[in-house]
Image (tube, rainbow, N blue to C red; front, side):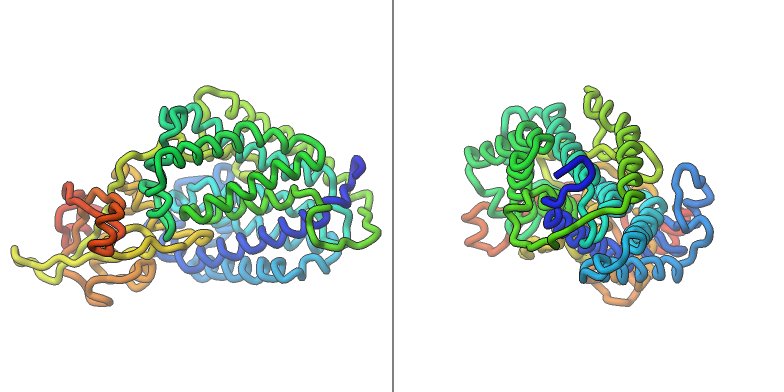
Length: 474
């Protein structure tokens, strides 16, 4: 390694860019399948309305030039094709300028979606994908020597991601300090996965070991990322293992997958079974550009560093509209009780009408259904339903329009769900109930086969007809 190139990072760069391409592919597929119903011209929070209320300066996006559902789908399909090409290795066969153009277009297209995505795209992993995607532009294809400063920028991103998550926990809920948070988390996380029931049933002692391992990784081991190899690689390997653990115990979209990919990028090249080309070099202009980018990231890091050091640390915050350098962190507080919204419909307005449930793709509903695995794919509606169960404020902009679409049996909205009680027929009324959910005990599981036990608590939204919804959303 020298000041400007690091041949030992060749394999790590390869793993990072291929993994990043896969995440981009999933993100654009999710946008293609969900965004028209969520933010399209007839979506729950339409982009045209958002554009009228904001400016280029606050939310730069290609859609400010023109927006239509057809164009939105075109952007998604373009992102799918380009990310698939990068995943297949075609980007590595391009000259440096072609490589940079491909990754820059992916970044610009996804930024354009995120910056008009409103509450549906308000998650930290959106900014993480954009920041990582921006850095990929300046890493160069396989036939170019990996830039030393570019690899250090990946280190810096992973450091802020992990250390920020560790600090937000220590400054937050007391259960992180008394090592009991994970006795609740597996059950109350936004979207449990098939193994979450099993993880929740671990002993308190093992939950404390989990928590200690988390603190050790995010607050102690993380500093190894700033050391030379092989120490940096050892620290990154620990993070790869911990992120793999999180992948099999929950559904956090691509947060854990992309963090794991960042960790792979920093493994010592001597550990990876890839043969790199014998001679690698970089043109002077590419090296100079890398220095300029690193200097720019250093300046933009001032806000995130201040945030890290602040007792009022904010998590998942962007400090510039292009989301180039961000702050990260999650679960500063852990929910101790799980509440779920159950949306029901009836085909009759009679007092004795039978109410039947809508089933969501990922979030808990039917108590006998095993929690499914969706990550690293992202189910945006399911996630927002979890937030509304915490506070109705999260649904202020979209919950009533969503119920209106259900009453209209809107095909695009129904495709966001696993099933509707009356298929494509319009119901007479809908309502929203709040239930308390908990994982069944081992004895309950053996006796009933259920993964969940639920108890009715209250009615969040009283029965509404299409006329009722129309009056409320005027």
